[in-house]
Image (cartoon, rainbow, N blue to C red; front, side, top):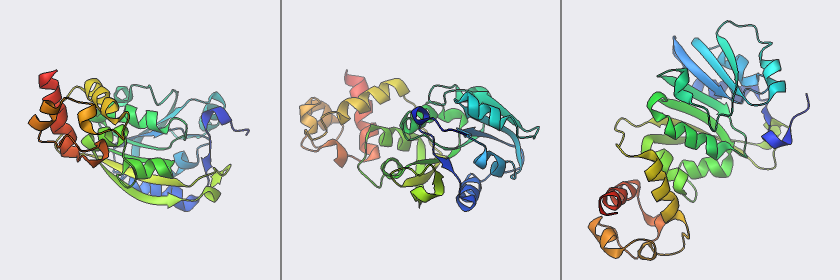
Length: 246
């Protein structure tokens, strides 16, 4: 089957890696799993070897959908959907998400996962290695790093070389696992995202060039720091003060 460059399709072919992905999802009997980007069904078939009760597969490419629909298993339901915009919680209240995410929209999908955190306790995702490291706090952090880590504990599981994919991508991939935190802060997600994107803009500037100094002092933040020097607790404390004072 001809792959479409516009969808950023790179099919994972390594049986060993596919098995590790399924194992990392920690599937138990009766679980509902949502696979993002089923492709030709390589991971789908491995997931069906686990004790899943229901497997939803989100796929945007209609040609791939036809391939997935050839899988003969009553537990599977294939949906034509854009996972970066889809209402994930419409599929259930306790979902396990998994997917080899397209490089070009991987971050958008992760953002959508965060916005549906209430119904997603765990997820396992393959991303571009640089992005995977960034999200797990092992690279230069960005606003999405903070957004994701506010709601989930993020673990970098492994690196995967290009030769394990068809066609091989130009860079390595990285596998992460996210587990929802026991204590979730109550905040307006859209407002929090807007706050984060704002302070991460022009990141070389000191915080006092972006926010009022009295706000930073009230939050216990040194005005001379730069955004990458803040901890997760600093971001939350600063946001709470910002919301009160704006």
